Amino acid sequence: MLKLLQTIFVFIILFTSMSAQAQKGDRIKYKADDLFEFRKNGEKIRRLIGNVVFVQESSTMYCDSSYYYADDNVMEAFGRVKIVDDSVTITSNKLIYNGQDRTSKLRNNVVYVKGDQRLTTEFLDYHMDTEVGHYFNGGKLKDSVNVLTSESGYYYGLQKYAMFYKDVVLTAPDYVLKSDTLRYNTLPKIAITEGKTTIITEDESILHAQGGTFRTRIEQSEFISGTVETTDYYMEGDELFFDDLKKYYDATGNVKLTAKNEDIVITGDFGYSDKNNGVSKVYGNAIMRRFLQKDTLYVAADTLVSIESEYDSAKRILAYHNVRIWKSNLQGLADSASYFLQDSLLFFYEEPIFWNLNNQLEGDTIAMEVTEKEIKNMSLLQRSFLTTEDTIQNYNQIKGRTMNAIFKDSKIDRIYVNGNGESIYYVLDENDPTNIFILGMNRILCSDMTIRFKNEKLDNISFYKKPEARFIPPHELTVDVQRLDGFDWRGDERPELVDLFTDVIEAPDLPEETDKPIPSEEINLENKSKKNLKTLKSLKGKDE
Image (tube, rainbow, N blue to C red; front, side, top):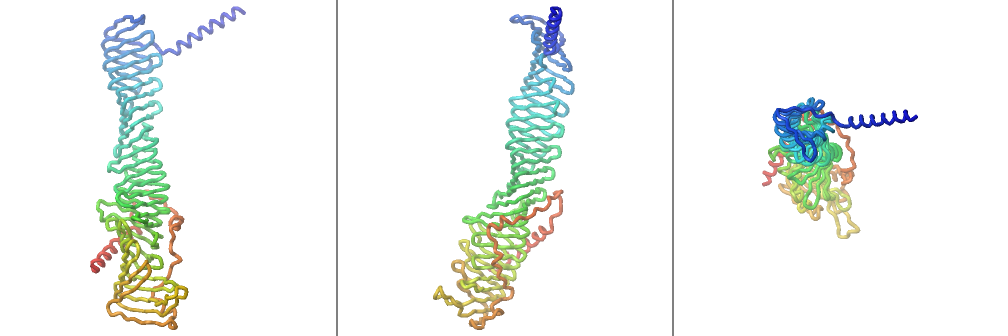
């Protein structure tokens, strides 16, 4: 029994000794031109000078001179330090190498190279076995595609990725990315950021995000809660996709397009910006807000398109289809619309119709001039029609070739009728507000008219160029004589503000390519916009 216990005790001692030996790294092997040995505080130190080479396992290190601390198995190297370890090469001016745990502390002009990666810094701690390097007080990683700099970072050679912290800057071929935290996958060249991220593209577009994935090799990125800054707009969304090669930005969820130099905001469910073609599009519950001094003009449509240009005269916004307009004292409907930013002109197409209190305005095309403070005027181009509902629900009607409505303090002040004027106007006895009745109806033909309003209600009409008038007494008022050709009261279609936000429009599929042909509806709107802008300017010239 005693012999068995002795055997076990010997085995334990041997096992402990072997374990302790296993925990220590292999002794560093070395050679040099000259070798000196001395002791300091009882510690044996070897001084190596000239063409120093020391080796441990797969690592070979070179320097001009060094100290080797035998008891600790530590080598301190100086001058033209170089480490070669499999596919890794590191150079510096100074090195402290611990043979026990195979860690290196490299200082001054440190250059780490592996494949196409080149890391430069002044302070690098590196583990030979795990190939993990940590730099601090500034560093730069450069590869075949990108350059990354940061205050501190970790490089994981075996896992093939790097982590960067504080003041991170990634310089890609066509943009610069800034973040506080970034993970970089070195083979696919993919950068993943956390927190506030800013990208400045080659054409000076700026993107802001709360983290994202950036495929730098193919110049595509995905990020969340971000903002894209184009020449004229800021585009926001819950999720954004960025293709810098095609200059294409896609947004999904709570999309917001804010004009830099205009009081305009466009919102919707989906959107994209195509910088090559100068087009930004928002769709799915798309709404444009034009902020006035005391009010807001809302324009809702299936799709809203912003056309950007270096020329102010070419900048415009297109809306199609199912256009709805709302302002506190003006509402309307149209199939499509275009807004010229330089002239502050809004054109509405395809049977546009507007309501102002008890007034209904119609025309083939309607143009509205909007200033910073208010709506200035409204022009009804071709086959214009004005209907006013009076206090006892009769419909006063005026039609003409064109009409120009002048607003004062955002209220209709007067309307000029130009050409082919016709009117039906009821004469009421309003002496007793509780017993209002019809005295008769005036039906008048003339060339031009001026209609004046008081408190946004029709007050009086002036007729020009040989008016032909006929007064019709109440007993002769048949349905036929009480209606002008083209009359159609559509008050039940008048939109409320809530209608603009509750109409759900199904979003179209995203385009697969950015060099797609321009949709036919946009071409049609472009042609209409240019034609009607010329028409409106020619009419204004005649008035002046």
